[in-house]
Image (cartoon, rainbow, N blue to C red; front, side, top):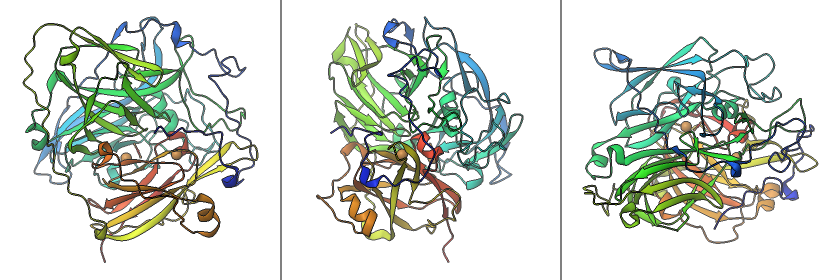
Length: 535
Ligand code: C2O
Ligand code: CU
Ligand code: CU
């Protein structure tokens, strides 16, 4: 069931040699003493479960401001600054240098309700030099661009283009942007993160992200665990040195340090390595986010304890799905309910395949749990295929060097700078068929919209690459029950055609769609699209 992502063992059939520069991927884990790299931390030498799980603070507004949508109304105003910080990821390591929103990594959590707008002034208070390796051969990050640039995108939000964090709308240190979020959408866990073109992977890796919750009456009517029984679990992996400092892996070409994916030796939960959480023997709701650059997680409890998934990227599922295992790709969210009542006094380990992530310490003694896990959550009408006015066939392309190393990734074989080709009409519904000839699963994200997964179908890549013939090798597979809700990021599996159905609602204007493996996104696996007004 697990899709192995084998970046370096790609099909030579598809090895279209495009770039000439060699980009050998440096195996940092395998060769921790490579001359260009400091010595990597051996996480196995660290004591486990000595730090409590931190919970990011809830942001509080600085006051009220007139609403840009209606000046007679005032809305909460927040000011959140990106700044250099340091924090301890583990008791026995010195503080790690990060860039974060506010004083912690992840940044503060924003909370609002559906239909209640808010304003955020996103300030760039970062230093003028970057501390991670910029690749100036990447589009948008050329030598003439300022090294430090940020722009904030609220992932999952239905936002006007001018507040959506278009990758070229970056600002330099000392500047800020005022963004308006109408929040006219269902309850869901969104997340904000940097989106600056060409260096997005470095800025998010540095720590520039945080959670954003939208609540609503439907969710509240369900009596799910809340308050201190509802907690975010934000996962990100980082490559740490023995001194506990962040290292971003680089290629062997000093002119072009980009690597096809950055993975770390340390899995952080809310910014801590091997944290523990003391829980009562009752139900908890965990809001899980994969904020990693490239890592997919395959999570389970070490004792295979079952749990329930109740929601996905864009909110609640129609009914809880009982699982013992969860796969989550970069950018995706999972809403989980774990019932610890059967585990009184136990220590439950959450693991990612063979790697330990964190520990839950279940207390003993009687507790009264008045929360519920209802069998029906939120009605989820299926968007009928007949509603789609257009089907777009879109390829996910990897270009590799003669030696088989990835050099660049594109959507529909198009560079970022080419004219916009996807122009859905506001209010219309389209099917996007994501044709993936590569050996990798790519988590594809569309800004502005939510969508449903129709199916995934194995096909013959070579016939499509050479003759544009779609020859299917098996029946279409429906999405798993835990992804059969509203999504904004979809795993497009290797050698499959993944079809999503997308109602284009909200606003007209220029948005983007991209792979959420940040190394791919930065090296051109991102395209603009434009929602246009009906004629
Ligand atoms: Cu979470 Cu365009 O990204
Ligand atoms: Cu987004
Ligand atoms: Cu990708």
